Length: 268
Image 1 (cartoon, rainbow, N blue to C red):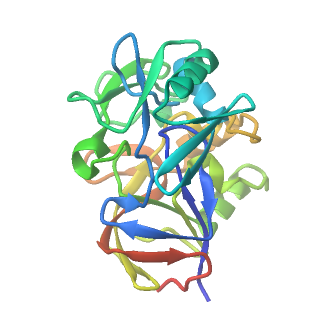
Image 2 (image 1 turned 90 degrees about the vertical axis):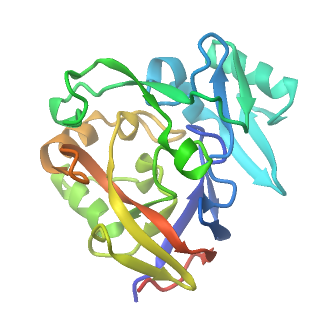
C-alpha cells in the first residue's frame, strides 16, 4: 500500500526543518511551515540559502516549533524567535546584521546564485548565466502569506529518489536535500492536475519544482554533493507550466481539502 513516509516543516525559511509524526494542513501549507524569516539589516532582503555565501549557514540552524513558539538552536545555544537574543545569535552566526520577522516586507525579495551547471538555469531567466547572482520576489508571500518559494506543499517520491540515485551510480540520495514537506511512497511523481488523497486531505499537483543550488550544498549532517546538481541538469530538465524548461525534482501541490496529515496514511 502506498503511504506517507515522512512529514517535515521548516518554521524558519532556509533553516533546518523538523520531522513530524502528524500535523494539521491548512490551505496555505503545513501548520507553522515557513512562517518566520531572516531579514537582512543592510538591504531588507529575505534570507535564503539560495545565496550560499550570504545565507548558507542558515542550513546549520535547528528549529523546534511548539505551541506557536519557535526555538532556534544556533551554535549550541537555544534562543526564542522574536527576541533580541535570537537576532543577536543569528547576526553572530551569519556574520551579517539580521532580524527575525513573521511579517513580510512590502517588497519581499531574495538574492540567489545560479548553479554553475548550464542546465540548472531556467529558460525563463532570460539572459542569466551559470554563476550569476539574481534578485527575485518571494512568490509564496503574496500567494500563501508565508515565506515559501511558491507552492503550499512540496512533495517528493521514493520512485524519483531511486531513479536519481541510479543516475548517480547507485548512491542513495537523501530526501532532505530537497527540503520536502511530504515524502510519498510512490513509483513516480504525480502529474500537474492530478489529485492525491492522504487520509481526508486532498492535494492537487500544481507544477514540477524547479531546483536551485540548495540540493548540492551541505545541510546539517549532509555533506555537499555537487554531482546531484549535474544529474538534475542532465536528466531532469523539463517543461514547467508553459514557462520553458528547468531542472526539476519533486512537485508543488495546492491544498484542495485541508485536514490532518499523519505518517503512514494511505495515498490514493
